[in-house]
Amino acid sequence: MLIAYFDCFAGISGDMTLGALIAAGADPEQFRDKLAGLGIGGYRIEIGRKINGYIEATDVRVVLDDHHHHERRRLKEILKTIHKADFSERVKQTAERIFRRLADAEGRVHGSSPEEVHFHEVGGVDAIVDIVGAAICLEMLGWPKVIASPMPTFHGYVTGSHGVFPLPAPATAEILRGVPWRKLDIEGELVTPTGAAIIRELASGFGPLPAMTIVSIGYGAGKSDFGIPNVLRVILGEESASVSGSGPEGVSVIETSIDDLNPQFYETAMERLFAAGALDVFMSPIQMKKNRPGTLLSVICDPGRAEAIAAVVLAETSTFGVRISRWERICLDRRWEEVVTAFGKIRIKIGERDGRVITASPEYEDCKRAAIEHGVAVRHVYESAVALFKAGRL
Image (cartoon, rainbow, N blue to C red):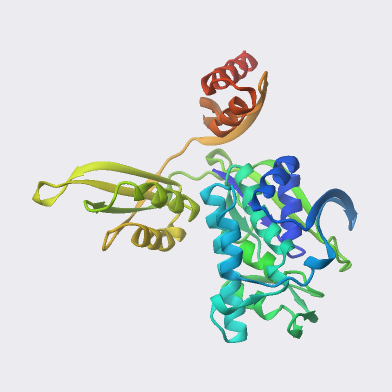
């Protein structure tokens, strides 16, 4: 399993997240191209490098036109912008969940409903770019499982659209309820509301660096000087049984039997289940009571996601209930290599056991993209990548 460990030793913000994910391997030009699908103007993205506390980090800046600095938006308007954009369903759903988490926190702080909240700082173009951009970058990295370190403590005051507030900002504190903190006690805003919402929604857990084989490391630059390296570190790696010494891993399986749902609705249900963090979703034909043909919907997920996954099943299908069971599974150790074909770079997913390659297959999305760009059949790209990989093993 691919893991992205967010080492928030100096906190987290939206621009730090983008910088770290791009430095960890998300392509900056594809990032810009995909963001253009938002259909909003008034900004440009500058991506560069800077030294921050003796660490070179990727610096992402969303530079706004003057008339966009004080723009206000409600949640409904933001979500409409996201959902009409040319993104995958999982990117849209991920960005929506992050914004809803922000709206819920702001609503609790100011005594209003999420729908009534006027987003100020977090509703600007820069925050939309940060949140949607984070989802886009994770998609480019293959949707790794996100784990984060505890948040560092900090203190002081911050001035916002509503006045002067203590740090952590009230919305940040609300969002990070239940998340562990470690003592650092820096004066200044280390964790912004946008950064808090991103990591709170994406992370499946908070703790130390898990056992993994490291693939890449990215540093994202912050903008302030706190006397420490103000960077976010993202460590991308493959969880490996040979490294961790683990045997079977536990997963939850959510199932329900359905015989009265419009078959067209299964597509949306599956997309939203994957967006909610499902590891796999599949459907099997079954015969139900009164001899009616039906469908068994099965979803595999991390145990910590079971409740959220069940909620999606109940919302998106006609079922009145689900069954949740705990299973164990054994997976091949997985890692990635890259081959350079006549159609461009293609990632190869390699499955190993006890250090021996068992299987290898080109990443379909890479093959599809290359096939479209070069006007050839997907199988030609796929076969070319397989041949080059095998040749490199001889």
